[in-house]
Length: 253
Image (cartoon, rainbow, N blue to C red; front, side, top):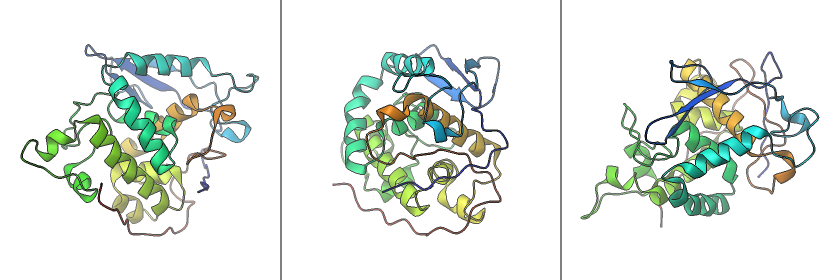
């Protein structure tokens, strides 16, 4: 399925991305300096309107990974849960035709590859799934483990989370930025905003951060199909029309 994406940012340049690695080796990323722990991870110097190539800097040879990509990959590989997650990510990418690097970027922003992560609202695991969302995708408690415990299993978390993301991409007519906004704020929030990114600072920063991480991880020359746009551009409120509604998830096998 081709993605139909658009961008309405005043500037065509990439945002700065801030980050830090905590004492457990978990990476944290944000589109702004949240507190004193966050340092500039990579500075905007890459075009964010990627008509010239997703993730490629001006003057860079085609196919050469930007320096930030090497840093990101090395950071992921040092994560205590990344190796366990890699096989599940590859399977989810293949099964749902979602780019591996997009799933990497989302997990980096959501949990920093910490499978034990729990948000203040109760979202759990690598892809920070709420238990109610996981239940929609067939994750159920059993005699051995609670639903919440299952969401800390990378294989279960990634299987359910990637299907949810894939359904959101379909729901919002291939708009990656709207799907990411819905993943963060809920599909209802995006629909109430008129099928635009809601005017929530957290959600707008979240979408920027995931897309920027994705752009650094997925240069144009390495694209191999899947749900990857030919051009990524951020869309702020005021420009998008209607999209289909109603997710139709099917239970996990």
